[in-house]
Length: 403
Image (cartoon, rainbow, N blue to C red; front, top):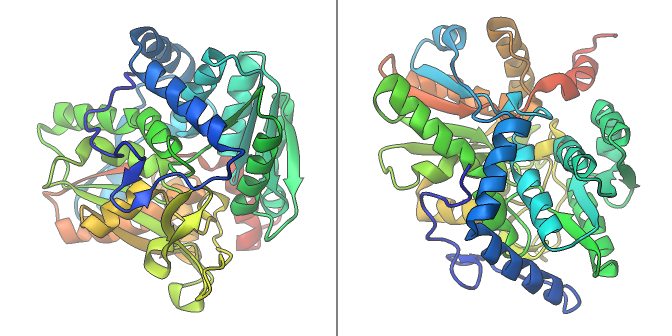
């Protein structure tokens, strides 16, 4: 895996994707951000860092991940050929480890001796705890109390890996609140701590750094589909919370204007109900967690709590690069409800023998529509960014099944 991306126009020198991004942080955090930016610029241009990443990606993460023709889903939807980018087969069960590996290696390069992270669905927390264990670093993961209850398997995995899991009870006890607490911790441990952010959000250079580490997904998928089909796909589809798995898939295809890029937000109980996590559909530009982007907010600019059945999509904002792709028209953003995600969770499991996480189950709901729209000659790549082991107990509860 090379950390050099195929397309690297954005962000600009100020960390902006058009009018989005930047760094809106307290003065006490600015020295940490500038130190990180300098270390990141050096590392991404260092062949030794790239070689180290490549080796761990191959031998520890298990890349490249497979590109799999989902024949039965393709038949069920009655249209385009559907290819799944199988990032749920990575070590730890999701795309999150691609980014965590890069950031923990960067932390070691910087001489940091303590790792912190926020997590929603727990996959980022597990991946961070895994790399901290591998390199012998203490790890603290901040997780909303609500998410702890619905993601118990991942909570146990983090503790088993030696991480301290800190429950966050403020707000709704979900991802936004966990990120708030992680930022507070970081500013009080300035000398020794590295904050591993899990998505393409936060102050610059995080959106650029996370996207760069995740762009391995799209580079692999692009080469694989050309080898298998002899042409590029008609569309690339991924679920969107903060948006790291989607940017990972999309980035290599941005210059290919004939390839549609489609992000699927969490519509929760329905956009019209107000109980959703669709920041682009139901939000407006504002500032949160150090960057300007689309946010769920009221008329006074106060953040509105998000809702999704999926802990990984339950965030009231979106990465600034997605905001830029949305406003520029290069990418399309649609949504899927809790009900649709539950249906696709079950359908994919029964037809393909693949239990998807609830996050990519949202994307599958719109893949079904897109497959019919494109017809039999169409090609779709969907990022299967996480496996559903973590969700089986929660899904059983929603379906009224006793285990």
